Length: 60
Length: 202
Image (cartoon, rainbow over the protein chains, first blue to last red):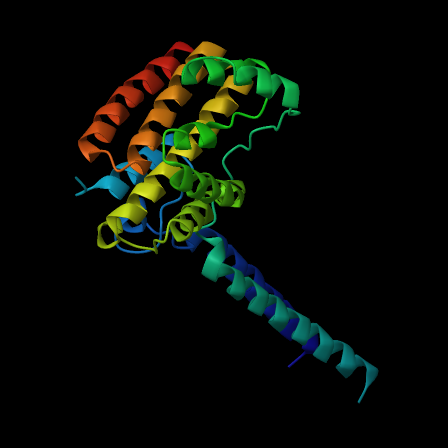
């Protein structure tokens, strides 16, 4: 096979891979972050309030 | 090996390595969120800060520090009513959490959790005392946001002082093991004040 063709195919695969990565990177839903795994992103004010409420849930 | 083949082999290896780098980034990059706007630090005037100590109430001291552009040491405020040994521990605990506020949003919550003795996941499986500490650290995050908004002109010094005073009171309640119902009551009032202040200054 012509090497130039192989290079072009590899470049196309690489570009397609990057494009796929950029568009389809899975982001965990906020509720999942808040409850079952990890910790929430404290970006919005509301997220801080929610985390605060969660931290005190069930305490007396 | 022919010169042409060497060039071809190097090119293919570069492409493969590039793919590996992209794959490695996906394990952390997707969850990364931008930092919350960082508050500009003002020059601390020791004299101005000291003068603010002469005010009788917490709110007056806070307002004084805001207007003097002195560092608002609310950490100390929330620890002041504790016994001497607890006060030092309280100060130290909150002081050591400082670096957590400079990291990105998700890393920030993880950092604050770790600092309070908590881990990832559901919070109700952790010790009550540690959860109280974590809540107090989250309140400091809110305080930073109030100070930032005041510096940006979105809040007046009065509004900021009132909000921070409420934050200090909640921290005080949390760290002195006051009933959580009292904290919730204060938080409900704080949210109303927060929304009112934000709506009035949009």
